Image (cartoon, rainbow, N blue to C red; front, side, top):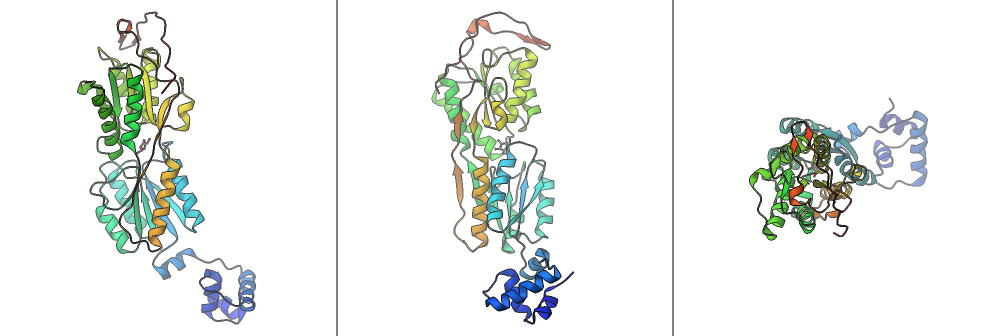
Length: 362
Ligand code: RIB
């Protein structure tokens, strides 16, 4: 493979001139630049990012470590980060942790050896990145955490306003007349799940509504968790008339449980999610949800990171993005007290009654 030395010889210029032309690191007089570019073309020279990275102790690569790209929330965050990275001459390398902290640490340690300019992390369960972040920073690489915060994190962050989003969703459900609410919360060790639970509880408290601890179930942020915990809530005597799911995947699992038990949404049980995934519009009924701006989370994180790499040494940034309530058809008024259909292990024992209409105002 041709190298810069050969180009310099062919063009009759110094190695430095070739480097300036190829890297755009200094302006070179037009006749010289043209000679270099002609030689580059003749030998089919391709600059090596690796060689360049080794010379500078840093490549134009940004590592992005996320829980699981098959969860439909995360691709938007990745896409936002990549768009900003690309526009600024950086490239993204993606790793999945499966929410496993050991795998997360393994990725971080290995990525470090590729001399990245920085790292964007959506932390896993029980994440603690203090030591890894320190070693990245020591090497002049920036680290930004998105969506969830690792333990004792003192660096840049981009999150959604999870507490307010959950508070608004719960308040909306309460305004429809529900007094017996359940929540299927995400993992208690994740900060975003904690804050959503906080918002849920705050709305109940302000409305002076008390629910027993059995009405709050914790699970993983996925469909299976939603399904199992919804079955549990729905089989309770005095089951909730409305469920707030900690994210849309949990809500999709809950819808499966509704169907299995022969319960109608929202006539028998109302449901609201969090994330506002594209799929939320396509469920039956379309799912009401709290929308959080995944794409903007990614763009904001990448921008902070690039600013840091370019010399911004200011105090840590904590960007909190607003959420928005998306009202569709999955929340209605509660069923009349005496019309609760009892569900058994195998499904519903039906009792006919006129379904009550969904209230249409937020
Ligand atoms: O669906 C994935 C969930 O985990 C989202 O709610 C997001 O906030 C993430 O942390």
